[in-house]
Length: 290
Ligand SMILES: [Zn+2]
Image (cartoon, rainbow, N blue to C red; front, side, top):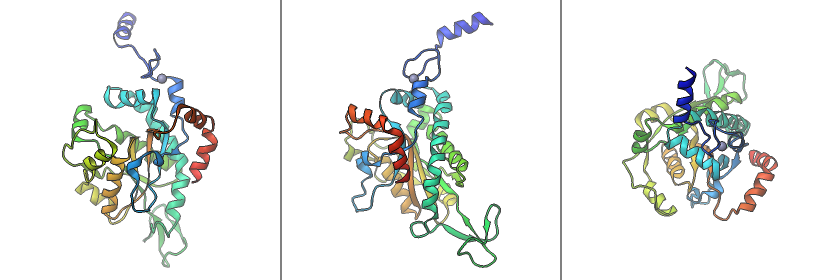
């Protein structure tokens, strides 16, 4: 057996996508993904709604640079599905940290009239304020909506990597006591032009309206759901903006989005990123409270 294993190792060497040999992922790459989540929407110009409403909050684990980029590319497009076991737990932990933040938004009846008075149901808190006598106010579970892949990408990968992340987010929210369920509600429209080589604005036009609600998704979300969107990487925000429009167009609220990594704003120099790393813990705590 041993010689066979040695031979397999020679033919299929194990390495972290950053190049470190003999480990599936290295401690340094794992550290980069250890979070905590920080707000990243300001670096995504296409999330600007141009109507005075602030962009949807996006929480990211890390900047999309260096080894993180290698990890994501290998995971998505180079057959390293085993990196699910690095990325999903990282996002699950991040979602658990976001749980209390999202929970407060859910509890604000002015912003999010979420409390649907329902008949006694399992898990409900009897006698919650505001419910009709004999009834329990039960919070609707948060809908965790993965950003859909294009048909071509799905065929090439024969799987939906973002679905793995969406499940991780739902688990993390559960860990924090926030009821959540994954609802793959959306699909891409048509093939669309390849995004490569298009500027931010052209990307926006290319994708504008290129996301649609599926019939099953509409049924699953019901009349009015509160959604958190999940994607792998935030770049210009064009895709996320299209997703937001598709959900809001059907009467749903988008509370925010969470991603593994976000492209740093163009002006973020190496030194400011280093500073950001140095003040990571403190800043992200503020961000979590924001
Ligand atoms: Zn590595």
